[in-house]
Length: 228
Image 1 (cartoon, rainbow, N blue to C red):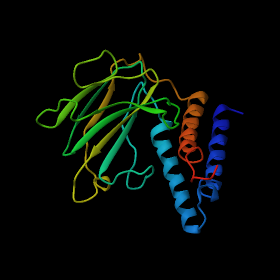
Image 2: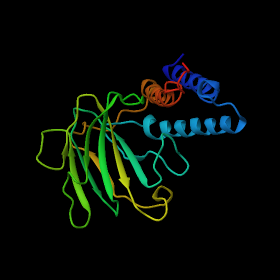
Image 3: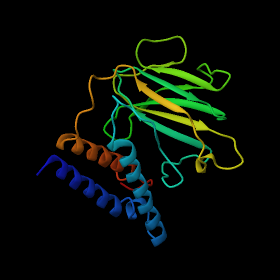
Image 4: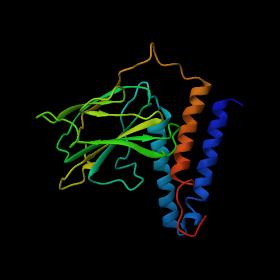
């Protein structure tokens, strides 16, 4: 059996187990409405894994929106927009962006998991009171590399993901609007040449990251007190 087929089978097994346990009595899900909503949550988590973790390349990072009006989980805030990008601790990145009327903007480094699983810890944070912002709302931050006096956020060896949070105080939910937030991330230590072709090993690894993401947010997550 190819690595890809084995990884795919593993994903289906985790989805089946999540459907039985996370959407079942282990998580105190008993009536039909709750069962339906639990399966919808699993589908949203799967969608998140496919969007953010299948195409996970810290050498060529891309910002991806974490939650949307049709992809919700983990207690997201209706007044916030969240993005994430893959990173690695031995690289240096440049972030550029604009506050765009946000009343609070912050970047956090998550470490301890670059395989799709839930991170072990938050390893660093920088908010808009801690970095310089131009009069037009634009800013530039360096991530990793040699320490700098301002607009710099360090990276630990096992850094795996960068999350941005943008909070608004609008009359309506910003999460449901099509607001444009200028945000870029560039690797300042890029590898030579094009990315490697997608082969059996790379596709299998991508599927396993999705599997780990689904597992960590469902059947490996906390249960109601008194259940194990």
